[in-house]
Image (cartoon, rainbow, N blue to C red):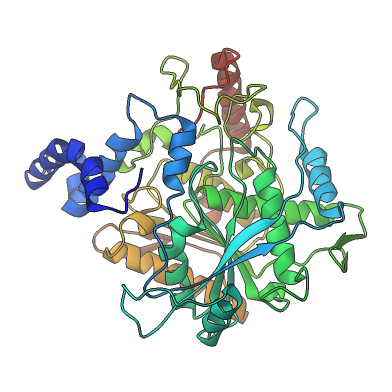
Length: 483
């Protein structure tokens, strides 16, 4: 679907006009529970999205993926320089990733080892003194990078992983986010085009993330646009599924550094372990539990637009297409059902965050809130610096979908401030903030005590959800968490 034309947009919106009129009327009368927390714009956006995403007639996976990859073009207040990091000729990076997966997995957990591939990415910067319609200059990608760097005023380099349920979206769909972060941090962003499921299951995206990180630290060749970026200048960043990749990458780096491996070869670099950690990791509404088993998936649904987890009684059978179901079939788009509780698949299952870089979480009163709070609380108890900011009544990734709202603006400012402080080496203390809807008033809470779910209950819930996925897959690999 091409949503760049007014006609296409009209076709998308028109079927939902009656619902939108009903929402507006009910909101004006104060009927919905959410009307005391949301303005009309929020009510319209969230409930219309909910209706669109929870359709009784599912769209084929390949069509959803193709639609989500539509490139809106490059114009306005952004510099974009497209680059490719070549796959290393040596096999060390792939081997050390597979070794980490194997060291952390249970005997019953299975995955398919993957090949190393070149990683595409977009360098993104803020382009000042132009209007929103200014066209991209006709320059080489290297020249675009030079233009971008001429406006960078800080050491901040964000390594960004986009959201999209691990099978949709692209750096091109997140340029508004990455260019805005570049502006607010006075830095630059490397937005990674990691391989998407289901064509490239776990751990393909994680391997791409590791190669991108190593490529920042150790440029693959003299042809690379950038010079080596010191680890203390790098902040991992991502939203939703991209947040999963961020925290999985942190766990991967920690596990590599726990191993007995002394060094690896990456292109022409011999890297002595341990690998340096980034300055920090910043995530917005990270999806940390692929099983979607936590209580907030149900209890916070009224504030969110995400569809509910799929039960055996309400199976979503996606029409057959070239991407799905896979051959051989599996029970999840991203990974084999058996390995959904692996800490590099679902960071919620990670037992040890000791030694991690500082972690920043921004999330709403949303369906994924519990899994964020479990990880934040556990990491804080293990002496990791954690900043946990929860926004009352806000839906999943509200900062990205409610652009222009006061809550979105404030959330972006806090995100950028954390990244700037982390790179500057400022002292960052563990703290929790509850931000009230509409007023924006802040109330502190203790991060260590923010989660009331025990480790045992987390594991039991995740395992039960995995078993339910097994019992409902019926050999067809079609029961999925629709996130």
